[in-house]
Structures are given as structure tokens and as C-alpha cells.
Amino acid sequence: MTRAACLAIAALLVVSAPQVLAQQTDAPAQRSPQEMPAPGSVAPGPLAQPEVPLADPAEEQRAREISKELRCLVCQNQSIEDSNAELARDLRQVVREQVAAGRSRDDILTFMVDRYGDWILMRPPVKSTTYLLWGAPALALLIGAAIAIGFIRRQRRAYAARAAEDGFARPLDDDEAWRLARLLDETGPAPSGTDEVFDPAPDTTRAAGADDGAPDASGSDEDDTPPKDGRPQT
Image 1 (cartoon, rainbow, N blue to C red):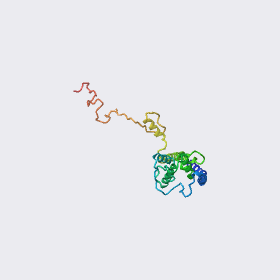
Image 2: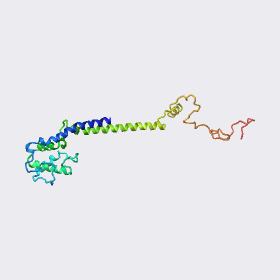
Image 3: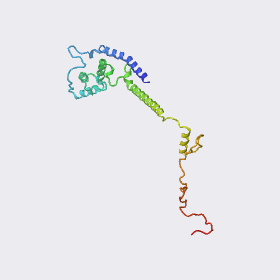
Image 4: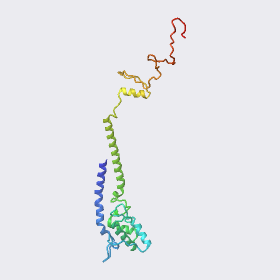
């Protein structure tokens, strides 16, 4: 089951990778004229420049909200707003420049997708090129559950094998079964060929005076034998 899941993941990667690479390769040609940098200006993208907040607090807040929707390409599990990577810092500055230029949220997100693909979005759209992004968590959960179930089953089989080798799983013979039944008050006839009678509760009321000179059950030491002449002894 685990091997089949691994093969399924590999197949999804093989199918999705060429489409994503083609989309990223063709992205520069898909930009609109408004998104192309002006002659003599620096093209938007990863820039080696300090991070400068916008002067307008409202625009700075809008830039931060948009940055929370973009994935850091270095950390991959954080947005560029939360990441401390240098590339994330540069992308935050690009978002600020786009906001200062009057671009809308959708325009900025489209610009980033055209440059880096759907992977840069923290919530990518569901389509053929993003099936793996949406299905990877569920697929990982299924693979983990399959591995855990397989491990538990192997441990149980190994324990049963060790118990059988140690004799823990040996069935009771007739004598042992009968003794167990007597212990559980399930009386039954003794098995054939068994001379020993097992008594779990020996009789403790037997008189201890079977030996010579021992007192009788009444505790008296007198001799009850009548005299030969018929007169009681004094």
C-alpha cells in the first residue's frame, strides 16, 4: 500500500512539473504592456535594496495584507510578510511599489503569478496545475496512516510469533484443562488415565487425634471404656 502511494506521488510530480515549468518559462511573455518596466527603470522583482515602508499608513497596511497572500519561495510554508528571507524582503518591497503605483490587489497578485506561477499564492486556485498543491496534505495523511497501520500489524505478528516460540500460546492438555476447571468450580470427571485427584480445598475439619496419645475431639483425656466389674471408676 505504501509503495503504491509513493508511485502515485511520483506520477503526479512527473505530470505536473512540466506544466508548471512551462508556465513559469512563458510568464514574461504574458505580461501586459502596463506591467513592463519603463526604459531606464529597474525591473520589479528580487531587488538588492533596503526595505522602506510606504509613507501613507493606509497604503502600507494594504501592502502588508497583500504580502500575507504571497508565499515565500525560500521558506515555502510562510508568507512573504512573515518570512525573514532576503527574497521575501525584496518581494515585499515590490508589492509596496505596486501599491504606490495605484495597482489593485488582483493586479498585483496576477503580476506575481505571471512571474513565479501559482505556487507563490498561499491559496492557489484549484486547477490541473495545482492539484498536487491541494492534494498533498491529504495524500501525506493517507500515507502516514498506511505506514502506521502497517507498522502496528507487523508488531502484532512479531509479538504473536515470539509468544508461540516461548510457549505462551501452547494449548492446555487434558489434565491442565481439568485442573483449571476445578479451580474455576466447574466440576467434571477426571480425565481417563489420571490417578491423581486434585483437591483445591482440602478438608481441614479432620480430627487431629489420629496419632497415639492425641486427645479426642471433645478435648477430654478420660477413658470411656467401662470397668470389668461394672462399677464406675473414681
